Image (cartoon, rainbow, N blue to C red; front, side):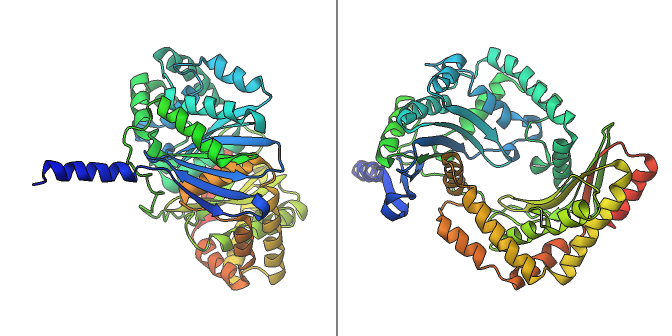
Length: 459
């Protein structure tokens, strides 16, 4: 049994620990590119990257929730909620939210993925306090009114219809289902017509309260920003909204591995009257925490990451069988995907698939040449740096890194990791990933005889 005095002492100790903790994660030369992190009492993390040489700033809030956190009945709830947070708060209407950012020439948006959601605004550095106030207000003060849910339902159903009309986009959802089946990773981020129609304001409110606690959020800001001022403004906004329910709560940890997908040899086809057939041939890839991901990035770049890549050269340049052909990787907390996409005339589907399968098999068995690997490393290093030339990309990098990995890596460290990849590393990951039996997803106007032959591509 604990005495009253012991309880008081324990409470005082807890309150003493409930202070903001600030640390410098990356020290940029002369203050440029300096990344700092503060964890507030209540578990809210704030990460900034300071670049005094620019005149813009991007402010974002990342939520540790994505479509893989949904039950089958809630499929589409995360994306639905993303829309609803723009519909009004206790202090702003939907028009007030949009006009506030428009009035200063800024841009504001959000996106939902399988494992996270992000809301952001990009403005002039002098307008950063406004961006902070508006985005924080959206995240902490959303009303989620029934009338807004009903109105936005129509917009989301139109978004689903728009995606369905674009077979080149839709085939990626089909491939996720082919690989993961009827579970959270295999279901579409947007949801379906049936699940969206079934979602109610009450269910979405409960989802919001569960997943938008400060412990589930990461605030990120990049550009000409002052870390101390950002922390002060964010803290004031969250405290005013009464968002900190537990002063000693700790941030939740990044997602860990729960299972590994080993799907092989599955084929899913959707017949549709399109001018092209859209195909994805692929297999399980690597989780985003896998140390081999750097070698996988080099392999992916050499195979289908540019105009000099093997697939582009073999399918488009030498044979003219497709306009768009590329490979890609997607990494999740516990598993991943590797896929090869091509859009081609329906009559050439089998030839395109044979070329792609032959190249994958050849690289799995014999690897890439040293020249291909060296070129891919150079391309990947250059694209990594060029992709971080604006404050929006920097905000995405530091916000996602904190949410998904719980740590930050400097650009120099990233470049060093890419440069350290050896030909043996690439050949080893090629044997492991490309040596697996592939699966196949196709959307297009395929005849029965053509469809039956497609199973041969994964045999």
